[in-house]
Image (tube, rainbow, N blue to C red; front, side):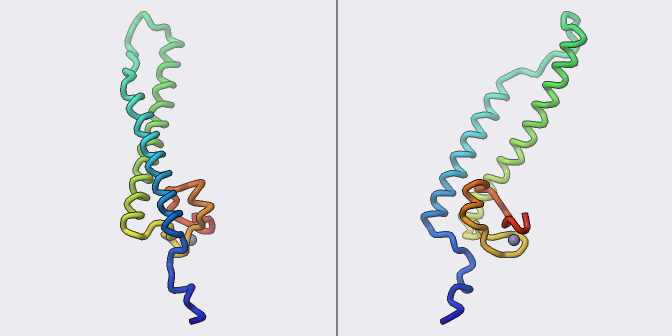
Length: 120
Ligand SMILES: [Zn+2]
């Protein structure tokens, strides 16, 4: 009787999980909108003689920044999908390293968190 608490691996309530699931879906939709908008912008032509050398460097740097941003977006997109999958499997909110519960407060800030503050 005394060890009843230890038998529940996840301490998040269904309401909290539903709220975090909504947050994940909102974040996913926001991210996808941003990614679509960027796909609409054409890559910069770098061999145009009308473009000055400095603007070519600018354009190159902008492309590198955009590529870096895109890489982070793709990575976050994958993390959000993985988190939603964990909700469906019932493993959401559990630390992947120590098996402990990730506190609700941490999940509110990073809903796709895979590890608790101590491990992550
Ligand atoms: Zn942990």
